[in-house]
Image (cartoon, rainbow, N blue to C red; front, side, top):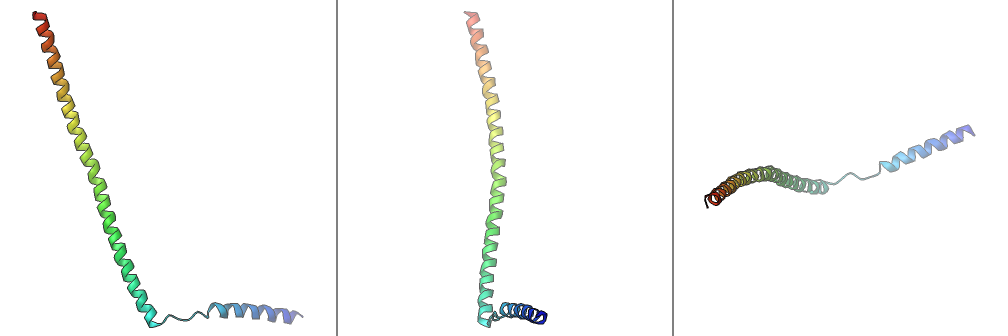
Length: 98
């Protein structure tokens, strides 16, 4: 009885391994097709990498431009404040003279 159980376990184990190994090896045509697919994938990956680099460069440039614009706006605002204070002073001086 013990021998039968051991033989059954070995048979089941070996048939499982045999069925796992029955997949056929790829033919030469499948390998070349696979190579062309790999070339296409590599080219697509390179295009994606290039687009990503351009996107990163754009993301770096835009904040710099915004910073420069904001700095210029701050300078203009400061100059306008000076003009407003000068106008108020001249208007106050003209009102005193009357």
